[in-house]
Image (spheres, rainbow, N blue to C red):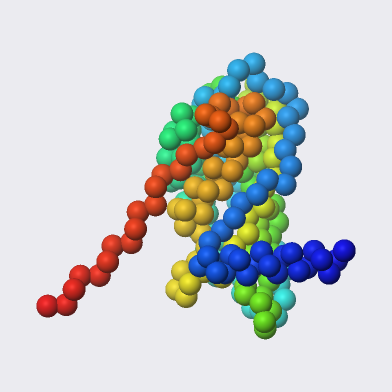
Length: 213
């Protein structure tokens, strides 16, 4: 069983590498505690920053080396864009302290609060395998009136070492992660999306260098 699971993970890592270091996000589980009376159309989104403990094998790679610390600013920028593209008005903030998080949420009125937090992660690199990063994201939907959770979900983000000079955290990575969260919210009846499918902005191709002369 362990050997089969290890082979499966290795095949997945190789497939990602062949795709140029692209990332995947998958739903691990979700649970609805109290279903809203109707689809939620406005959300205050709060990213709670975590100082992860590094775990790795045969590597000195740290989470900040792969761009993990870019996530707060990326989410501030991308959440309104992705959510509003799907008909959901949203604001986003990031905070290290739960006290600051509660203060921000209390100042945002009666809109539902969606918290996002990376709860653990791992960077693994071996002499014959590519560097693989795995981050587990937990999302909670909170009623601001009762401060009780209405819904929760956990998601796994996995990507293999990107091309030299780049890291795995960019607009496309965050947009896709938010897409998977929104689609799970839709499947659980929290938000409304056509066919439970979320849209993300089209990626613009990199500008080519001007020709010499």
